[in-house]
Structures are given as C-alpha cells and as structure tokens.
Image 1 (cartoon, rainbow, N blue to C red):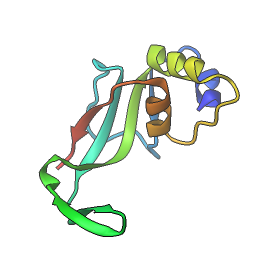
Image 2 (image 1 turned 30 degrees about the vertical axis):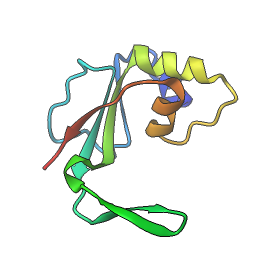
Image 3 (image 1 turned 45 degrees about the vertical axis):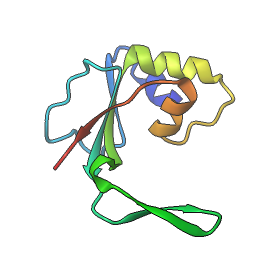
Image 4 (image 1 turned 90 degrees about the horizontal axis):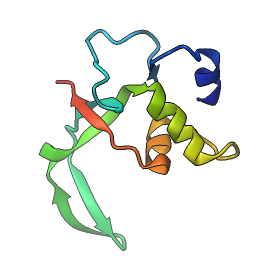
Length: 107
C-alpha cells in the first residue's frame, strides 16, 4: 500500500482491492468508503466452544471492496502506523490507524 501511495503522489483518491474500476459511483465525501455485501449465511456467536446465540444477519455485511480512501486519510494512516508496521489489507490499515469506515451495502 505504501508503494501505491508513492507511485501516484498526485492522486486525491485511491481505490484498493479492485481489479478494475467499480461499476458504480463512489464519492469520497467520507475519508474511507468500503463496499459490502449483505450476509446471507447464518452466523453463530460461539463462546468456549458452545453456541451462545444466532447473530441477526440484518446488521452484518461482508466487506468485499473496492475500498476508496482519500489521499489525506491514506497518508495519515500510513504515517500513524510507522514504516515498519505490516499493512496487509485495508481493514487492518483502518483499524490500526483508527479510521472510521463508511460502508456502502451493495444489494
């Protein structure tokens, strides 16, 4: 991810995790936007090897991407992590840097 930022220093928005540009419009009003799909499988909360409850699916999404991040948020997040911190995916980057993620649910 650091290489992507360095390779396009003039960019204002970066799309992460897309083989091609998204087929729908994403506006960068939020610092970080991710596209999610509604969860259709049943999800269980398990504690100590025992099913505690069924988690309602209505509030769950699977973050598939693409992710759209502003240059300011991208640079700031990478700066907060430090040069040696591994960054393997956008969610890890946002969590480590304390960035909020605006999720667009694609139906």
